[in-house]
Every structure is written in C-alpha cells, then in structure tokens.
Length: 451
Ligand code: 5CA
Figure (cartoon, rainbow, N blue to C red):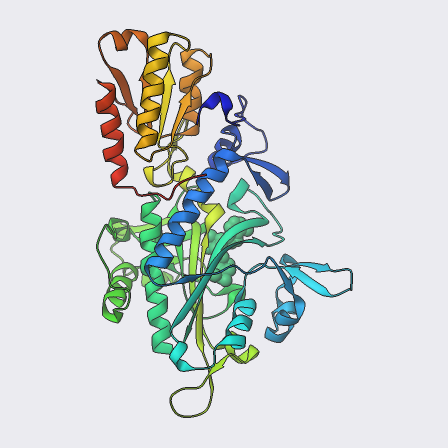
C-alpha cells in the first residue's frame, strides 16, 4: 500500500476522552472512530489488525478440529425464555421488538442458539464429539463502556461450544481449548495466564479466565510469579490425546493464579512470599464447562449406544477478539506509539523515502516494494512529500515492527537502513539484503493475508 493512496487519519493531538494508552493510540493512529458510547467504526488500519487477529483465532481453532460456522447477531427471545436467561440476563441485554411485535435481542452470547442448532440436527452419540464456533459481533449494554475497544458495548467475540456424551469427554474439550488458547495468544505476542475464575451469567463452576498482566487491567489478580515463566512455545500437540491436553492444563494451572472472584487468601499464603504477586490483568478469554445446564433446558439429547436419550455435556469458550487489540497495545508500546508484534502487524514493514521525487530514491523504493510484495508480504510505502521527521513519527505511531529508510546519500553507497521499532536499532545494508532479512523474520510468523 502507498500511504498517499491509503486512508490513515492520524491525529496530532492526544484525544481528551481516552484514559488509557491503548485507547489513545488507537484513536491517534487512525484505527477506530467512536460512533456512540462503546460502539466503534473500524477504520482501515484497525480493521486490518482485527482481521489478522481473527485469522490467527480461526487457524488455531481449526487446527484443533473445531468447526467454524456463523450465527446471526439478532436472536429470538423464545430461546432465552426456554433456558430461563431472558429474565436473568438483566439490563445488559439489548431487547428489540420487530414490526410484528416479536421480542428479539442482539445476542450477548450464543449458548441457546447453538444448542437449538444442535438439537435440530444431532440425535446420535456417533456425531460426537463436536465443537462448533463462530466469530461474530456481540452486544452487551455495559453500564460503563470505557477504555475504547477494551470494554465496548458492541464487540467481536470468538465463541465456541463443545458437545460431548460424557463429562469426561467434555473436560477433554475444555483442556483442548486451553491448549488452543495458549497457542493463539502466544502467536499474537501475548502472555495470557489462565486463572481460576467465576462462571458469572454463563454458569458452571469450572472455568478459567485468560489474563494479560497490565496496570490498566480491570481485573485484580493473585498469582505465583512462577506462572509467568511458562511458555507453550512451538511444541506439537495431538489434540485428540487426552493425556497430552490434560498434561498442558496441569502444567499451566497447578500454580496459584486466580482472579479476585475466586481468590483464597489461605491458599495464596502457601506460595513462597517472594513469589506472591497481586496485580491487574486484562481478561482476553474465558473457558467454561457447565455440563448439562443448557442441554437439559432446551432438550438437546443424544441416544447413547444403549439406554435412553441423555442430555449432552457442554462448555463454551470465548476470546475477546476486538478487546485483544487494546490488550496487545497495552503490552506493546512506548512513548512514540504502538509496537506491533510481528504476528498481528497491519503491514509487515514500512518503507520511508527520505527524498520523494529523487529519481534514485523513488526507483529504490519502488523496487523494494515490488520485491516484498512478490514475496507475499504487505509493505506500507510512505511516498508522501513530507519531511523525514513527520514520516518517522507516523511510522513510530502506527507501530510497524520494521522500517526500511531510503535516501539518496545511502544509495550512493549502495545501502538502505533497516530499523527495528522495538529496539530502535538500525543497520545499513544492501536493499536486497534488507528484503531477505524481512522475509526471514516473517517465516516464523505466518499470518493470514490481510485486507
Ligand atoms: N459464552 C461465553 C464464552 S463463549 C462468554 O460469553 N464468555 S465471556 O462473557 O467471558 O466473554 C468472552 C470474552 O469476550 C471475554 O473473555 C472478553 O475477552 C470478551 N468481552 C466480554 N465482554 C466484553 C466487552 N464488553 N467488550 C469487549 N470484550 C468483551
């Protein structure tokens, strides 16, 4: 993309309404525009990152054998009356009447609807295990929408639902989700720690939240600092193996790590004092096992090999897709702007032409652009007639992890400059060598093609 032809409405001033850094930077970098409280338009740069995050979530879900589908945002009230949650859900649910005066609602989550799909089409144990998921907009009429996309009213969520014959099978699905989540967040450059939590309006007493540590997080958390040493890394895992998934769950959840809802001071005191941490975190996902709560209420049963039909065991598993942008920025920024991890960056690399119009500089930039594009990468070429300082400031603000700077003086010596946004370090090298290095870097960060 050439910046002169792109739509990147960056703001020079700090927007006064933003209280936390990620919100401020998303507004300043021209990623989002508020439409009303807690509801945002996703401008091209924000949309691009959102799609990258979605892509990683899809890849990791499908890797584990989970099946994507798409349910509507609007739901009929009847389903929620069947489960009993229509009244329970309270004012967070946006209720709407259609022209025939039918009660509808904008879905805050989809347990009822997916159970309805299941009961309509599945009746044999042979169709199990089954995990279906979608990535769809949700609406929760939060009393205090704030911090930009972090606590929105309309927000994008991945929600997945497992259907299993037995509790044991459903717990395997739970563990499998935990593994997929660890991989997912690490690919986004995040450490998200699973912590024992509370079921809330979804239900169930067996649930973990995934928390990214950040001072601006809304949750208070208590943990053994040894959990922060754990990484999933690039290990291969057999998602069908009960032992392997259980092993990962034990590795990542045995040490003390809880949100304030489930915190137990006596247990926490057993952690060696120097490892006890009380901090704040951003909840970027939650997994639940709630057994037959919805299947019983809605009559989602399967016929086992013998005996009468029995309600299936279920769980649901959410990732805050749009919230993740805020969480990633909270964890990756400096005074000059965002620092995208390679896995989710909107463009792989910036190209800054220090002297737009100079024949040699223009030709070198065009060439770099062509080579990177031919390698399947997505560069952003700042081809505007602007001062170098302004171009650098924009690149730093929008946070592309790598920048190639091209100027007539360097070209005379056959070199361009390659700069890391994170370390600030630069090296001079031949244009082809810079391209080769960028290609090499992104080999380790396969990202779905962007928009
Ligand atoms: N049905 C279950 C799991 S599929 C569910 O709804 N879980 S949840 O309530 O925990 O939401 C899943 C994730 O969505 C949360 O972990 C959080 O990351 C994100 N989320 C929840 N509310 C908001 C909100 N108001 N704004 C942005 N993200 C949100």
